[in-house]
Length: 497
Image 1 (spheres, rainbow, N blue to C red):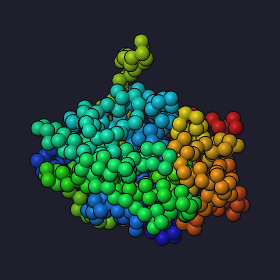
Image 2 (spheres, rainbow, N blue to C red; image 1 turned 120 degrees about the vertical axis):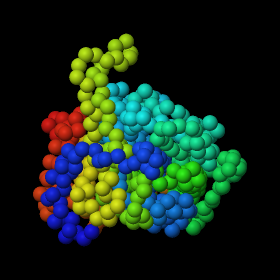
Image 3 (cartoon, rainbow, N blue to C red; image 1 turned 180 degrees about the vertical axis):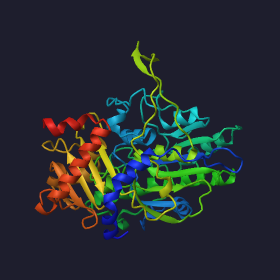
Image 4 (tube, rainbow, N blue to C red; image 1 turned 90 degrees about the vertical axis):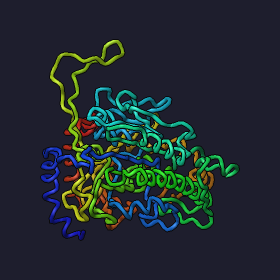
């Protein structure tokens, strides 16, 4: 879409968004046998656009690339927060993490958890007659809020053996049942397993039975502009790509099973990632390398395939889209209150389940989507020690970020700080980290405004440019209004700090 066309439609974007939210859920898309469609949601762990189908010439992802040729490839899909648990909570609840309570990581000392009274996607689908299964990572708390009927993780070796994961998924799909199914397939790859490590086990290439190791030569790697071109970065980037190939192989096995079991045409399939690569400059930031992610979607019985969509969508839209395609309206939530460490219903009117995203089903088979041209971003924590709330918006070609704790240095996730890439920068006392100076990366301006078309690397902050003062003010007003609509506790910062 040209810039001029975006400008023509920008004045209508908010009206159309509000109108779409008010629409009733679309009629059920029935399979050939009259059942509701099955759903397979595939989520990678820390994967950006490092796929052949997104133009990466080094990545070896033949299975995902083949799926892209038979589905729709979204070009402007984003997570709302580039952090594992918060992002996954958004995926499964259709609410921003500042509203669902999963402010940071769920595991270990961090101990963040979403609100018990929410209904997540697996629970909603289970209540609608679906059988549900998780294979791999869930990483959202509490379990009762995000409960699956079955957890099939036997022999998956921390969800790194993606071939075994696919075999487990196939066995579950094959179980005799009259119900449609929802499969949540989430390998740990390509997440780090330690500093400079991606669980590739070079000394034991056969550790993951059935998985074919794919290796990369660091000397031949081309690092992206947001990373420094150093020996450490090249070596880690090569390890990262090997882990991506393992993810691809497992996805390929699963997709083949769906075809062999005659579920290709009656299943909604989505392939995406929770956040960007596990390197400083991407994961835990709201810059494009951390937030702009792959999204491949195939509707059941989809007529047009192998095309792209320019729709600006985010992970808060995933649950509403799935429910729209399935024709499922969530059952109301009973009124609750905590009592003796348990949630018990109390007298009162049940409350409807609401979402802060909207369905993008209509955009799957359209290349141009002027009514999908604005999304919001929200990050609060990663690890419990990493308090650095950020709120933002992408509207057309412009991105605005508000760093609420900007006087503080940007906090590092422990695995990113200990990465050999960052440690090399510290050891040499480098002043530059990719396209940014180390100083600009660690110490952020309170307000950041970027023209993503003219400045895709987000290095020219326009927030203090008088020529963009009106645009800055407009986007700030939109962010504040959105915070108020979505019950963001941090909205008070506009008044008190």
